[in-house]
Amino acid sequence: MFIEDGILKSAYFDGVIVDLEAAITIIKDRIEFLNGESFPTYIDARKVKYWTKDARKFHELNNDGMTAATLHVGSHVMKTIFRFYILIHKPDIPQNCFTNKQDALRWLKQFK
Image 1 (cartoon, rainbow, N blue to C red):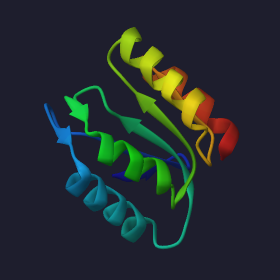
Image 2 (image 1 turned 135 degrees about the vertical axis):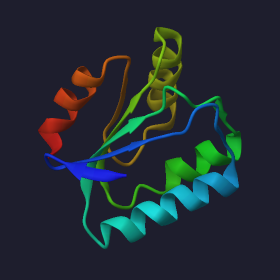
Image 3 (image 1 turned 120 degrees about the horizontal axis):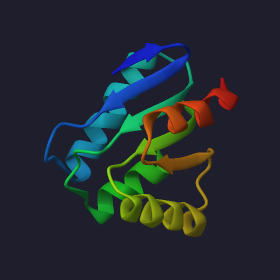
Image 4 (image 1 turned 45 degrees about the horizontal axis):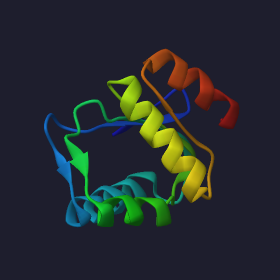
């Protein structure tokens, strides 16, 4: 996790399964790292195996430190699924999903 050009950037490890315990740790680490500041956030999730339902719900309810978020995924299928999820769950902050890093970062710049 690091800040570059006014954007918080993070990436998941290869093959990780994000369960509730992992989600709690990820969000706790983000809040501690940001120390009360908020940034648009780029998340490289191309290597995630999957998120459990509890982890998705916990992430949905805990956007502290993020003014907007984009998920970088490895397939158009995952992009479509995530965008559908956003449409249904209507997150508190702007969120989007891309298969291209530059497109994701370009979208986030409007929230700096």
